[in-house]
Length: 246
Image 1: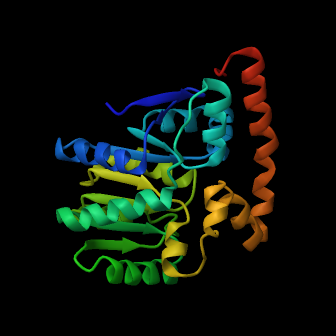
Image 2: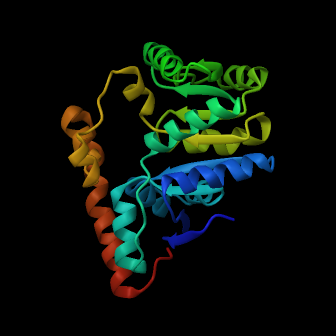
Image 3: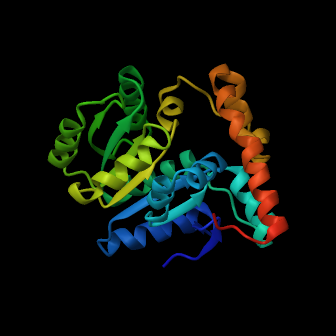
């Protein structure tokens, strides 16, 4: 069992990206099904409001601290320092490891032209990687066909980039039907791999400000930032009362 820290009732992984990859690899070697959640503060706020989403996150096998808010909350509430593990960095580690181990991967998410471009670039960067299949993320009403395609591909790893909470719900409700032993929600990583979006500068990444960069380049994201006051209040209230439970 990977070492973890309780943050608002969620078991958040303690350790570096490399240690997370080792923990994932150990589970795969044992033949265990593994759902990895890349957790940010917006997801925590949603989980506090939606019990079903909280159950989905709680059922995940490994939860890594993707957002700087999760790291900050752990320091304030638990006096513990978490190492932030950006989802895209973890996903690239998964791809690299899969290439070396000869494991097949299925890519699911983004717009049709984005997933096609992302697949092309992944094939260039990881020439020996076995990509068993791919599908865009706009499959409402056609989920069964997507599930059938994944099953037929017999992929051992599934990367889902349909955004939260959709990607977490999809993995939770389909994992028992899929051949995949590792399933990871990777948010907007396909857009970056495809070259449609760029990551924040290194200095912004080091300060945990990638969320601000994304909001600056996509004005539509400003509406989503309404969760920040809710998260701040959540952390402060928990600090004052000593309670993290609902």
